[in-house]
Length: 328
Image 1 (tube, one colour):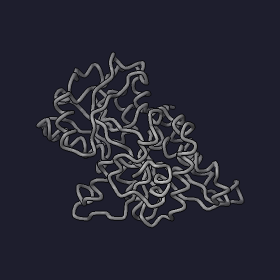
Image 2: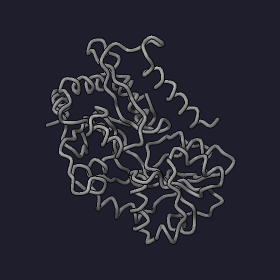
Image 3: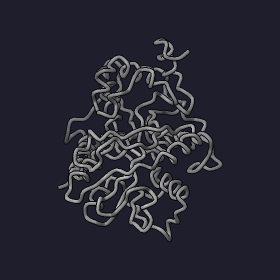
Image 4: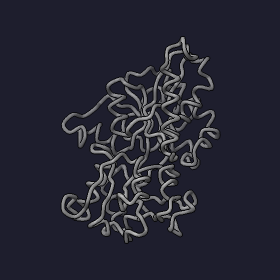
């Protein structure tokens, strides 16, 4: 059984325990709110679990438990929060920008109800390619089989933008796979795809898995010209690098320059101010422990929590950050 499959099985077992009738298993008595995250191999799930863990240290005082739930990622998380399926979510800053402005997935339907709680790490645009596919740059994707994630996902949307920038016609110049990104490592190792595109925090279990297989892999940089041009045009994008320390089996010898986008923990405007205040308080007061929950959080600073939030900050978060002089 693959690492991805094992994590999926574990999550399903946890979900079964939490949803089974109280006569069969121990149930939680206190009220519960959910955080919509991402697939169980990704950093969103780890970050959401870390937030829940910090808050749940005082759950008896607050009479509230937080639970991280797996999801399909940023777009699904925004919709889940907007429609009340979950109270909180994690999303890429660009997806929140599109929702606020009524663009792309929310064309002509701007969403004014989203509120930022705090910023997290930077996610990196990551191109994972099989070494035997002869891909040295993004232009070399022409003629290859490339997985871009599920239709409607932010990964698929970003892939479309990259192809347009390169002048590649997905229907004529590429063979496109639209399988879920968490399956991409197995697809690449099985020879079903040559590369996959993934915007994600590092380290990532999917990339660790695919780089540990028999088929050798490398990470491809978008190139300095593209990085600078796109970062200049988009307020939510920044130049960044992917460290190689996390992936000892990849063929790269140096960090990979790429483009990054912030991940943001967010909610709705109508979520209780005290609930949000207590969540922020627990993360802040256990900040060292919080940043040790996953390597992607390790470089996070308290000031990062309030930078580049894209949507308006929730009053509960604003109140706490003003108390700590992190906001003017």
